Image 1 (cartoon, helix red, strand yellow):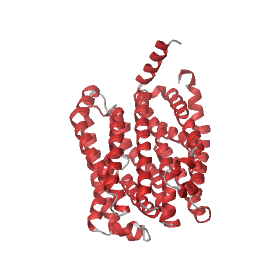
Image 2 (tube, rainbow, N blue to C red):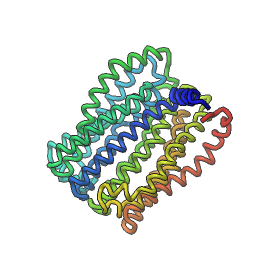
Image 3 (tube, rainbow, N blue to C red):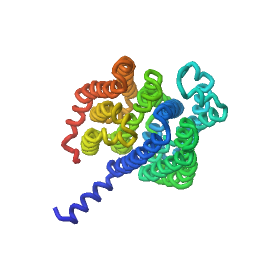
Image 4 (tube, rainbow, N blue to C red):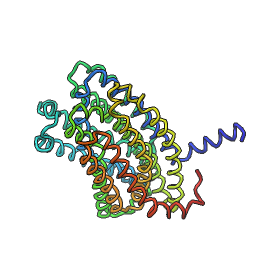
Length: 435
């Protein structure tokens, strides 16, 4: 193949919406990961492992409460904006209004009852201060909007904006952490984590309202949602329940570790957990792009699913191998103790990304096909197995039990969904797929 032909093949590949949007989201993920390592590396130098453990519990609780408040409307924006047509603006406004009300209600309820939910947590001292408590509640709404924007931009066909947004956020929070380094650990980390998101929510929302929504409406004005309001609510309710299971695993695990093993071990756990959950975004973002394209061409879903799975594996397998080999050196950035305590857990979690990618693809297909019960069953199984095994083994095995539990849960579910669901679909249309 000549250089010109090779260049033409690459440009054709990048023009394909499935790959273009996936690459944009993955670049955003890569920027977030690199800047995030720098962020937590600085935090590890400025603050003790105990401070980091307490801050991680606070941030994890924010993420969990935000996930409850989002009502899974991030996925609704991603899934249904391509079909909303002339109702795009109203649909977006309805989603944002519902999330704002839910965020305020969930935040206030948590602050009022936090002694019940986290009675021994180090976050209670910070949240007992009225000014910080108000800031925490407002941060739930802000973080919900910030996360919804990725789904909204992807649904509008503008995923290319996401890397710029995430890059600005990462740089801003890192700079703010340095400025606030003289504060106490929990407050400095939390404020630097959330305040930049507020500014970006305002800026990006204005751009979406003034430029992207009018353009999308003009382009797709004749489209209509294929579901009745009642069917839409029923589907989104099931998908919402599934999202709560997923968030419970990711967001509450640092809180559970701190509660069982203490803040210091929570700090050693959180750094590898951040690396693992950041890597999760590669299959998730690729499948998000697949979802948008499959909605437009449902007849080709098998071929597109095959392309997506091959594409995901090509990206994550080399990364997994490299990170597993260099896991001790990577964790050494944060200090020798982080490497000693977290290497085994990180390696097990990285292995879990392989079966997790299969599960994420199945969930994406189920969303396109509006199979709400299958989504709930899959996600509930993953969460229950991971939490039960982790909580049972944490006192005796320490943080490594979480990596093992997550690997086992994803492997169990992936084996079933691949044989029962994915293999027939991929085989049925494999002849039309080209990677």
